[in-house]
Length: 156
Ligand SMILES: Nc1ncnc2c1ncn2[C@@H]1O[C@H](COP(=O)(O)OP(=O)(O)OP(=O)(O)O)[C@@H](O)[C@H]1O
Ligand SMILES: [Mg+2]
Image (cartoon, rainbow, N blue to C red; front, side):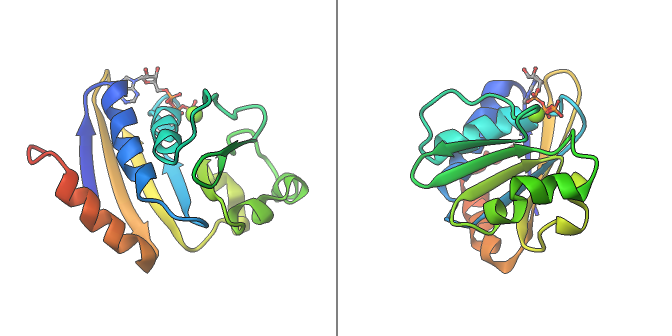
């Protein structure tokens, strides 16, 4: 497990960028945390690290926003999903098991469609302070955690 602390949205973005830089096609990143925890702020950094250069907006109403960087990037927000059928209708499984990177806010809303192998990121905090915990839910992410630990500021 890796724990990172940030003190403003820019630091969260920068950490996301480092992470995005290390992702591979097919990777799934689940972003958990309360409303306003900073999931979209982190997702913007991850997208930047994946080489997406256009502005990223929250997929709150669209559910999925698709981008193209070094690879396809699917940024999802499942907050408004109330039935699994809605996910089936948008082709959720085609997105997450395709060759792009999927970044999913509110992944717990996916019910039984929740993937087994993903990078689990949990965010919490108050004011401008955030604690970001990263836990690999797949062996393929263990190396990435080790590399991010090497990069991490020693005070964290
Ligand atoms: N250290 C920090 N990291 C990230 N965001 C921060 C930080 N400090 C303050 N903020 C602020 O917290 C808010 C986070 O909003 P953001 O949309 O990223 O949250 P979210 O988790 O995606 O919310 P939602 O569940 O509504 O999608 C922003 O207004 C951002 O400026
Ligand atoms: Mg959000």
